[in-house]
Image (cartoon, rainbow, N blue to C red; front, side, top):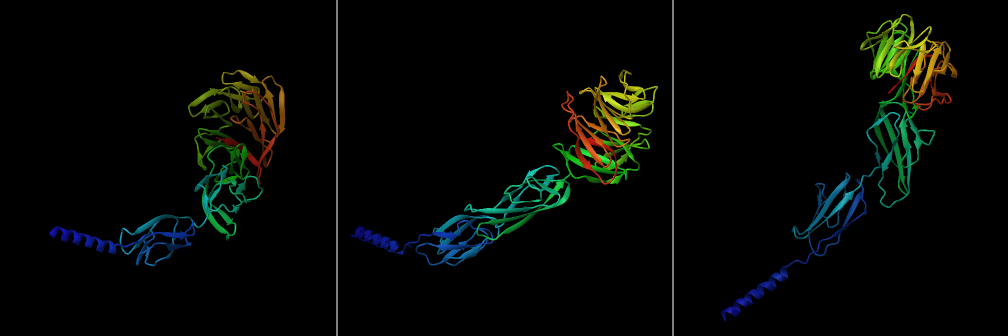
Length: 419
């Protein structure tokens, strides 16, 4: 009898507990499907059962409304939860991605002068609607494929002519059916670290023009000014050297003019990376004296990576072998192509070692050409202009048409190309 009574009590308690259990299912939806920062997100509580609610939006804010609205102020991923009747077992959660409300200009903060870059924009467009772009750049920019400094392409390719501490890019994006959104980004344009054309003028100013893919950019004026007129330049020992009319040689290192110990020089050149200079009767380098002559030297040059020089009677190697009976104040030997370039007064001659004239070119009186051996380009001055003459492949002479490279407000006195 006692066992039957115990069973009855247990059955009664089970029925009471089953009657007290809550029938709650927690769920919710939200809109819009792809919300953006700053946009109102509406939450709809689709739960069954439950009397009180606690919403947690994942950004340290909460709500007790049944179906609240919320604004996420920053883009990112947020875990949104709703809890019924303050019981952890009655909870539902969803991860919501909040997109950036504005387009983003996707480009590095630092660019390089005369180096083309492609600009991209990150645009919130989940429904793949039509997007119109308007890119605006400064006058220092050149947009590939257009004549101006604006573009309506989605990804324009641009290069900047000069270095700049601040270039502001403006982008206006219009997604179909929505209002235009405009954003800006500032970038720094560094000076091109590579081949460049240097030249000086009669005001003793030094100009620098980067050369990229054999194309020069706008000139950049160095802050320092020469103390005397420049008559010749060359690139050696990783810097630019300038021969002045006084016979002194100065060097340009990172845009700063500095004196050297070289005096009484008549001509300068580079050989195997070292600076060579000639006085009236000798050839020197930083290693010391290389050669002396009994005849006055008019120019120093190189022949198969060895010093060579010109006098009134001709052009000679350092072993006194005569290469040519030509002579000139400015003489260049390009041994790989077997040619000699001589500048005299207002004329520059290009001849081969047999004495055959390959070209005769009028130059500015008293100026000297500069040969960029790595590119096979001969640069020369015609007054306020600089021209360039292609010489063909390294082992074969193939003289092309002169190319106009640069012009200046004042008469140019000396030129060189740096690596």
